[in-house]
Image (cartoon, rainbow, N blue to C red; front, side, top):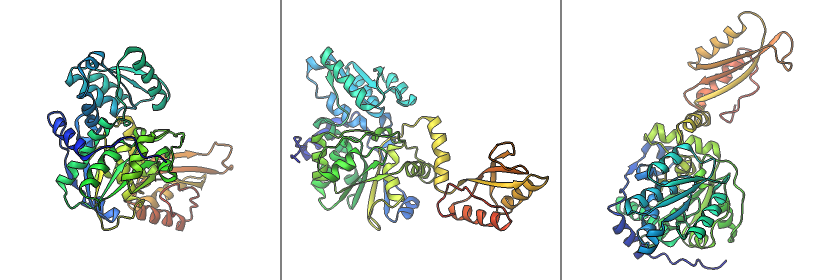
Length: 413
């Protein structure tokens, strides 16, 4: 594999940090004791979900657009994004007096589409995913002469994202590891250059969604691979093909890349809500998911997890909370069959009540062709304290003579 064409210097990141000071916030670094104990590390959260526009992306967007020459400013900018880069470009362009057009996939979260429009950009919905949106944005730039502001494959954007790393070192000088989400790799590579240039011993671990593992596989195999992305909660990480230049930086500066599953992303989002009082989107929760669900080898290490964004649609958040509660054993779906006679359902519910669990819904079916005559199939959605409580509940139901044959979560029933 060839060396990266980009030579991102620490000086570039320091220059970006000084230039961006009027435009972006220094986000807080929050101690996360409860989550750290779950992960077995000393944990701090770099809360980029509290950044302007709700994401780190505004850093790179401002740093790129501020460097436009006067004639480029007059032509305006074009960008493609699933949401967070879109909002960053829209805000940066508005505050720097530049016209912005943003192409977003047709399935982009509504909250991100409306926020991008709210910041003053013209939004065009095109394509099924980021790659199709980007191809259309590139054609628009070629036709109009506008400057294409890439979400991650641009040295000025990468340097802007790298300012997150400088802030981490300022806020926690003795940090030993940083875990960071990876989509296209702009944040991870810029952050890694900043941190490792000043603290070479600090480990940098990138996290991708298992449903969109293009960087993970390319990083491990040492070459650019096109890997189709499946639907994922971490829409901000769903890049099909990493750029050679950015992959080169990641290979040089990042120590490891790991992947997390969809239910782990959901579980991490719920844990961040409950334990840290932070709203994180799927991509933003990826680093915490990797730590809590054992994807790293950082036990006992002083660690920062970057919570990269918090722009999540409320309807999605409701569904994610339910899924996350199932992942953590707080919400359990139990299926059983009863003798279809008066009192059978009451006996089952008495067992549940005796164990201190709370029934959310009951589905009672005796008409389905799959259910034998004289029986009824019952599905309970039950709130429990945790996985241990859920397993104890199932044990007691079975001891009472009921056969629970389908308990999807938590594992180990």
